[in-house]
Length: 76
Image (cartoon, rainbow, N blue to C red; front, side, top):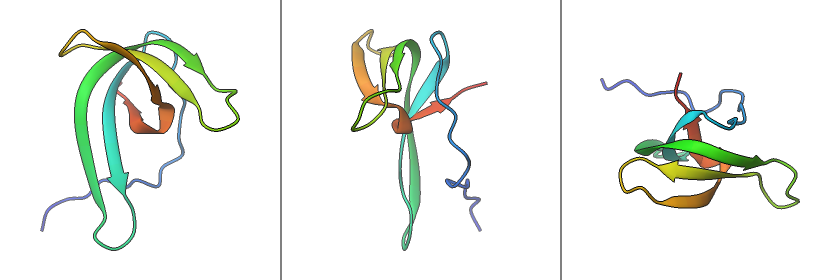
């Protein structure tokens, strides 16, 4: 039986300089967890009324973009 990672852990916001990995998930019936590119956090805004965002420099294609923090996994 394949192992599954728990997606219900307490969320920790990334900090400037953190190595992060993009991920997406779906909870409930047919739950899944998918991982993607690695990047370095350049800026974090945790005071948005809609959602918290981070500016990330992605390693694989050298792009820089803003992304919702809940789609980032901090790599230790």
